[in-house]
View 1 (cartoon, one colour):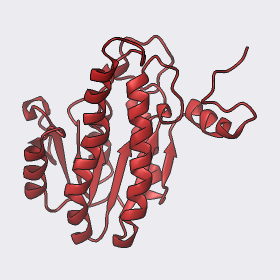
View 2 (view 1 turned 90 degrees about the vertical axis):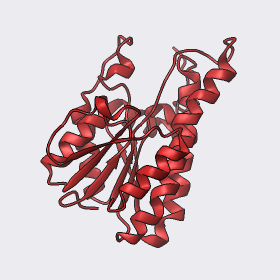
View 3 (view 1 turned 45 degrees about the horizontal axis):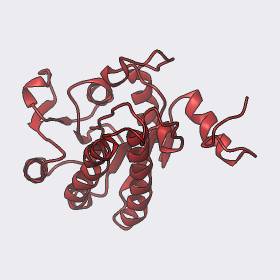
Length: 235
């Protein structure tokens, strides 16, 4: 997948990682970026960017986006939500359903709508923004972590299903990124620009998966340790 002259759709493009993707794609020579957001007025005007209304939880929005953006060659599923809390909290079922609707079913909904478009335009690429939380769940972000595990599995399945039409599928994993989503967390964070650059470097190199920071790389390697990284670690 090459960025130069690509036509890209980004979900959740009005801030954070989505906004960083839009800027970096244009800097690398993308021909057009469709920037999707629930409220398109939140997309800052810039040359090469076309704002469009896209709530990934709304099938009508997704269908309208697919009808409009029929020239897309790369889809970036970035829209996502999070909420602190464990599975034993009183509202955990409600929270889990709401988070899965965006982080899993939203990804599926957009991917299904744009798969035929990618095929018609030569295959192209699908990049799903996942997380180190795909592999570890300490309970602080229980529903979010579970949703990213499900999205990881979805990404792996789509990679197989889209192989015949020559669509490259890349899963992007990282730990904490310095965005609005992590504003309340006092932890080391990586800038969204760094994450996006590593993701696009991996995409152009033909990668299936990008581990975009050191912590994520460590966690993935430690999954096969004597005491894997997804289990509580002993002092």
